[in-house]
View 1 (cartoon, rainbow, N blue to C red):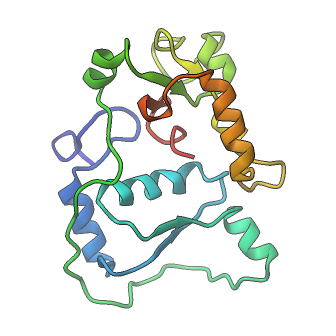
View 2: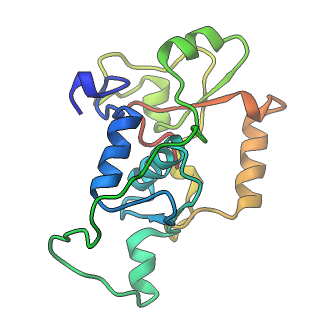
Length: 191
């Protein structure tokens, strides 16, 4: 989106909720539908769509564990070429957000009370390499949990109990409700 159409800046600006709802309407998606999102990049991009749907107040959204590769391995059918939405525009209306966007100002104001978890690779977090951002390093006090650590070798999410144990260890007694997930662009903080 253009700067006027986004709620933030950066490499992957987030469109305003109203514009996102308009796009959903135009694709034929409505408030009663179940969304299943997937990609073939370790859930990094579909996780953003999952979060955006939750941010728009949509409850019925799931991530296809293992993505397109798992679908194909299970014998699921695949099509190629452009798809024209089969439905006419709908009346999708955003509902109260089920997920919260933390702005730079929110994070700055909460540094003493929140726990920031940085989902970027460890070398970027430590400031040893920075291929994208103008400044290397991380937000003071942020913990590092590279998003790839949420996935098993098979490309699927680790079991919930394993993820809970790993995050409990990472948080070391900090309140999970006070966590702000962060990355360099608003994509890999989600999965």
